Length: 113
Image (cartoon, rainbow, N blue to C red; front, top):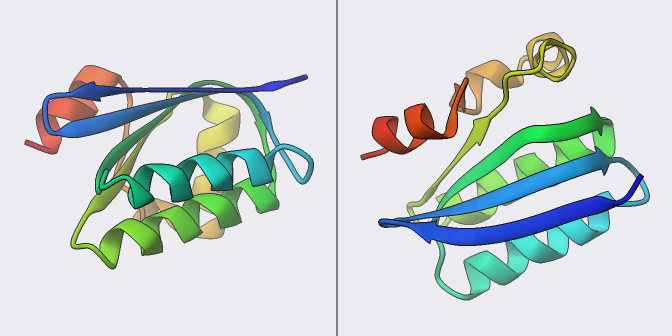
């Protein structure tokens, strides 16, 4: 399964849509995109993970790294995730306390205003 990455501006937020599998093979592509976005001055990022079918520890590490990167610029990184099997990974690892996780993109965009 390929990893798809698309980003767009939504007001003062940058939405990064992630689709497919985020694993040891595809996570570097996600890391590169997050580094690129922050390098271009996008510090308020919403990662839409509603089309993610699989996420492993490498993918989690990339998201944590992205969070640290935007926070160093007083930014934020929130997630949109409505799939129980993916949410379970965040709960087990305790990352629900680290990331704002929303059920929908609309909710994430409203919350971060």
